[in-house]
Structures are given as structure tokens and as C-alpha cells.
Length: 334
Image 1 (tube, helix red, strand yellow):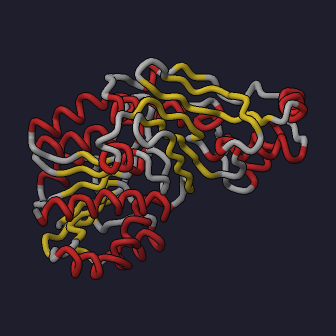
Image 2 (cartoon, rainbow, N blue to C red; image 1 turned 90 degrees about the horizontal axis):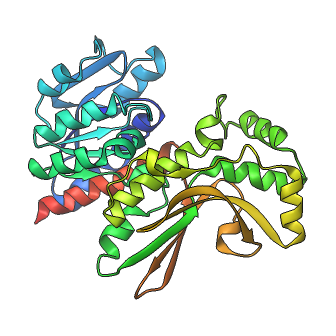
């Protein structure tokens, strides 16, 4: 399988490292070599139909800040149209305003009948219908496990392993940064601003934390789950959203007196699409602390299924991308 990696930041580099580590073993299992034939970032590109050395790409990025020797000129049409490949791994940064450049990258690939694997929430949270219908029209596969929950398998579990079930609802913690902040407020009695600064100092929260603490990240994930699992045609703007900025230490203390904690919970079903702080009983699975994501999937036959795991990180996200890559390799064996 020949792949192109669009975006060579933390996640793109993680993908290259995973292919470097596991490519040979996967090739032996599936009888198909995995080759990177193209990679590009915002400044540069590198292509070779004979295959690129992942180690060389990683070294150049580390030393020069560029994945390729050539300037990319911000032209994905030229790069993607000038090389033969099977699957685009689209891992450019999420843009919730218009989904670019990820949306254009994906549409170029899908319109050409190429498969797409992505961790990019923006295009799916804004234009899921356009992407999925384009994939179907051109007999291409669109896979996006890495957009929700990082290494926490939610989408593929729901759509594949639980295919015979009727999923009634999904409820869970979809953002580890908010969970860390709320847990520190409870454990140490910290005010919100101080807990946020601690998260920023530790590298858990961004310098501009609004994407996390205002519930934007969780709302994007909720919209993706609504479309992918419940078949709804929803966008990020359809999600009722309340972040955690207004959560005070007094509210956290009062919740503790009632043996409860406050958590930012996403709720997704055929009738509900919301992200908001909720009271959760201490000892309940959703009272979990730290930076992990946790989701409860309510089904008609199996009842309640709880999945927890790391929601972000280079190798965690690369793990989810790898699961989608393996699924495509399995399809090729049929």
C-alpha cells in the first residue's frame, strides 16, 4: 500500500515512526508492503514513487523544520495529482472555521478514488456529509478513528464490532485537558485560573486554551459521533455547548459535599447532542481523573459498554491511525 502523509507535525511524525517500527511486520502479515511515497507540510514536500525512508523524513524535519527538500507552495493539487498512491493520511491541524487545508486535501484524494485516513476533526465536524458522500461516489474509504478519543477505540468499536447492536446513546469525557483541570480543582481546592495555569505549565493545555475549555474540541467530537454512529446530518454548530470557564471552586466544593464531581460530559443520541459540565457521583466510571478519555456506549443487547484510554498524544493518535490502516489492509486481502 502506497501512502501520502499530509501534515508532518507531531501526529504526522508519529505516523512515520510507527510505519518505520511496524511496517515490516505488517507487510509479513498482510502480504503487502507499506510505502510512504509522499509527505508534505505547510512549507515543503518530498515525493518518490519508489518509496521514501521514514527515518530520513524524520531527521530532516528535526534538523531543518521541513519534511521535504522542495517548497510545497501550498498547492496540494499539484502534489497529490503528481503521484500515484492508494491512501492519504491527513493529519494537518484542526481548523474549526472552515476545515482547511484538511478538507481540500481529503476531497482531492476522495474524488480521485483514493482512501483517506484522518485525525483532523475540523472537516468532519463541519462537512461530514460532503466527505462521506464523495467517498461513496468514488468507491473510496474514509476512516477517522483518530478524530475522537485518540487511542480510545470508539468509532470502529461502535461501527464494526457492535454492528449488530442498536446503539441508544453515547455519553462520556471527550477532552482530557478539561478533565485534568476539573480534577485538580477538586483534589487541591484550586480556583479555575490556577488549575488552568498548572495545566499549561505541564504542557497539557495550550497557551490559548479556549479550544479545550470552551468545549469546542468536545463539541467537534460529539458532532462526528452523531454523524458516524447515529446517521445524523449534524455539524459542530448543531451541538449545544457549554465550557468549563464558569466552574468555580465553590461549585466543585459543593459537589464534593454531595459525594459528586463536576465533569465536562458529551451526550450524543438521536434526540440529544450536547456538551456541558455535569455532576457525576464519585465512584461512577465518568468520575475518572487525569487526562484520559472515557465513553459509555449504551446498546440494546449488550447494555452498557465502557471504554477508556489516552485521548491525545503522538503515539496515541498514531495508534488510532494504524488501526484504520490495518482495516484497509484487511479489506485488500478479500
